[in-house]
Length: 210
Image (cartoon, rainbow, N blue to C red; front, side, top):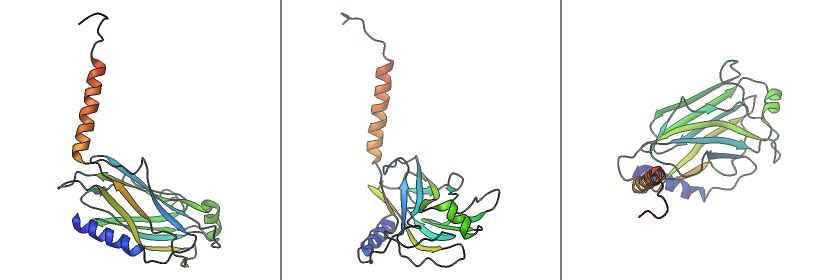
């Protein structure tokens, strides 16, 4: 875990030296806020925006990215995760082919290729949409829980319906920082909730009774 945190912080430091790019944005947005709890479920939406603005005026037909996370804290759940529909349905009609490879601990490789033509994709997509929703089980780490954890994307490849690369750097590289409560805090919260439930179950006293 320490090695992962060091690499993540080093990578974030390198971002400050990267030139700012233009209109395209990808984001990692947690459902339910930035606080996660061991034993719970984390859902993260992967979004893209800016395809129709800033002079791009293109559709997205292919994307690839590598998502890095802490394997001591997060476990990818393929059955709970899902793909967006703006590149076409990935089941049934087979309008798009999508793959999620989590065979390497701490690394999730995402690939999706649309089988639809550019005109149809343009009608489906608009300026921005959801690429996927990624689900993780938040585990109890073997050592002390970190104060926060980082998810970030790298090796991002985007192309249009014809397979032509979209040569626009991202406005910001997708980074998500999540806060992890300490186990002691969770235990105190649990005790407080139990005490509150017990207090509510106590029978009320009659006025004047000691």
